[in-house]
Length: 243
Figure 1 (cartoon, rainbow, N blue to C red):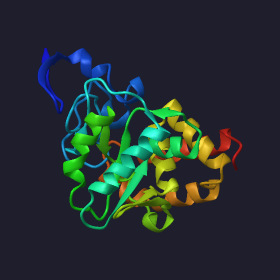
Figure 2: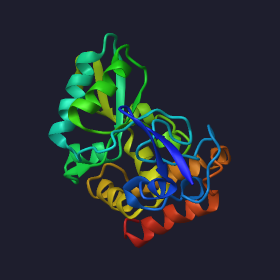
Figure 3: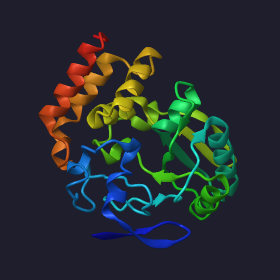
Figure 4: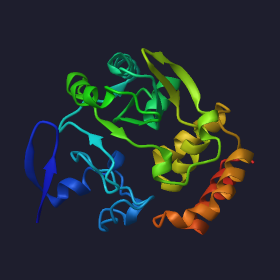
């Protein structure tokens, strides 16, 4: 069976094995039931991000190249500078995941730029397709709130990276990043959370209290099992000797 795959430069038919081989970081996705289960569109928590697609299962816009280079700190800063120069009105950009990790130094590269605009400045969406081709990078509009309920005061806890033209850029709240990574549970996600704890970007007490605070909202994220999520958070903190 074949699936239609779109990227910014071409449209072609690819076998289903293409999708299975290109889930995030090459790992089977638990979110939305994995590669063998198609999550319902537009349901929170049902994301499945596949390389080569313009939109994922939640209809979030994904700008990808068929062949992209790994993202370095230098290339990310170049991207942010050019993105800021494209902004015609003031706005804020929150980066997350691997992009935060390479800026803070515990990863040297990542596979794409995950970001969220709020508020959205005029001009940036016209610039992104051009920048991803010029820099040979992948860009996805994604944030921890696509996987778990938004945490209270996440914006106030988001740490400033700098001003790029009219664009203020921040690390998305590290508590939100850490809990969404614990929900996914991939090996690289767990290493990232350990590094956040080691660098005191988050604390065990705050992780646990905020995980408990979002429990009532987890029913809006059908792919997330409440008991499994809480058990995973507690087990990680206990096994990592952080509490």
